[in-house]
Image 1 (cartoon, rainbow, N blue to C red):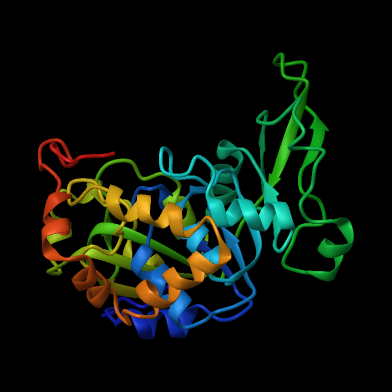
Image 2: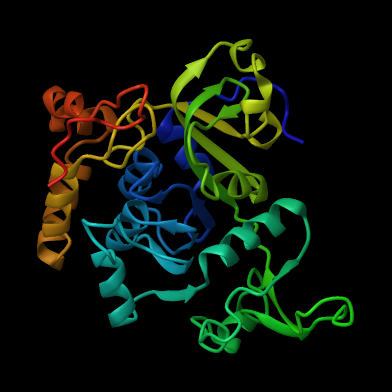
Length: 325
């Protein structure tokens, strides 16, 4: 159990302390929603390498980490940002050229894998992927698994249902648990101990947080100790899981954070153009990421007018009049 103390620290300090070269990392968020982008950019600036990354159906965060050369191995269900990149471009290039190892699971399987990790059990059963190539096609060979004691010796295992006389299900798929070294999530509200409140869809963030050995939380609002004690049933992650709390307004930018701001279509469209070639992407890294050494400087680079254009309507949770083209 984590100590019940003040866990607030700066983003550079948190990333440096917990995200080590070669570690197993998980990031939260979904496609272009609530990715922990401030932390992703800091990982890139600190030039962490050889990361083994887990994600549910992330998009922007995964693509930028892959493009920056931070990732060696990836386990994921889907990598895309919808209309901007139905399949993320740096991820796609890495997959096609086999510059990183990628193993794919269904969306439901990835959620179950994090859930198993959060429960402290080695696997969970499901029917998901029966009759598909997900079972047969592995991204990590048996030899690679044998060389890496952090990996299960099988991608998936199918078994006969031991209770088949009780129901119609004859076969089951066993999915292995995930227990990352560190998970990073971005939330709307947190307190200094690490209690968290996520507005809107939680995706697999809660399971990822609870499955991890260490948890970095970035948040829009850092609240007084007593605030989250009001309506405590709305708090999804208790302080016992948290190791670092970092106050980063617009910490999911350029992805969306429900009830706070929408995604930035101008940034994401520009990123798509940069991601199409190695040379343009390297220019993007140098100018935008390394050229702005903090997230606040990156936001200043974007400009107040652009940020104001994506502020969410509090009733709807998204920007009503945003030009999404």
